[in-house]
Image 1 (tube, rainbow, N blue to C red):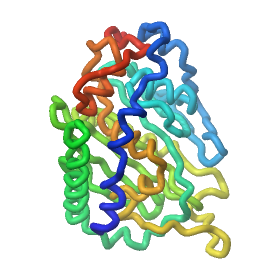
Image 2 (cartoon, one colour):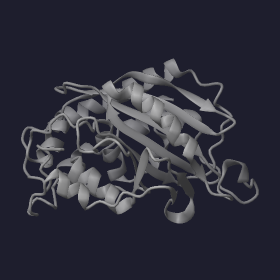
Image 3 (tube, rainbow, N blue to C red):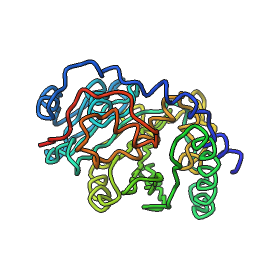
Length: 307
C-alpha cells in the first residue's frame, strides 16, 4: 500500500505550479457576477454526456453546464487554472454558484479499464486513511520547499462505502491547508462501468457536508451509464481490466493515471470555497489558496458582489 501511495501522492506537481498558474484572462474586461452567470448556458432535464457514455436525468433542483461552460466557472469563477478536461458540471438550481454557499459536482470519466470490486469487503479503511495521511505529509516537504502552504488530510468526512448492487463507491475527505480559516470538503462518488469509472466530485466547504451528502444521493440516482457501458456489460474476452481495485480508487488510483494538470486540479477542487469574495481578483484567490507569497495576476470576474 505504501508503494501505491508514494506513487500517487509524492508527485512532481509542485515544481510546475507557478508556470501553470498564469491567468490568460487577466487582460480581459472585468465582468460583474451577474454578467458572468448570464453568459453561461444552464441546461435542464435529460442530458447525454459527451461521448454518449452516460446520462443525467436532472430533476428541477439541478442544472448542467457543458464542458466549455464548466471550465469558465472553474477558472474564471472559482479561480482554478485552465485546462481541466471534464464532461461538465452539475450545479444546484437554487444556489448562486458564485456565492459563499455555492457548490457543484465536477463530472469526469476515466477509461482505464473495468475495475474489479473483489477487494471491496476486505479493505481496512482506518489503515488506508493512515497511509494516505502519511503520503500527504511526505508530499508537504516538497510543497514547503517551493513556498506553498502545507496541505493535510484531516480525516474521513464520510468513511468509504461501496454499493455492490449499484456498483457505486462513496466517500468524503476533510482537508486543510495551513493558513485557511475553513476546511475543505471533497465528496467523492465513483460509478463503475464496463470500461472505466464515472467520477462525480462535489466541491464545497465542510460546513455544507450535511446538505451535500443529502443532495449527492439525488445525483447518484439520476446518473447512469448508457446501455452497453454499464458494469454488467463487461466482456471478459474483449474488455480491458484496470490495474487497480476499490482501495486504489479511494487512495487515488485514477489520479495516478491523470496528466500533470489533473493532479493539480484535484488539489484545487478540494479547497474551492468562496470565502474570499471581497477580493477583486480570482487570480489572487488561487495564489492565497495555495499559500503563495504574493499574487501576480488579476481575474476577469469581479466576485465582490456575487448576487
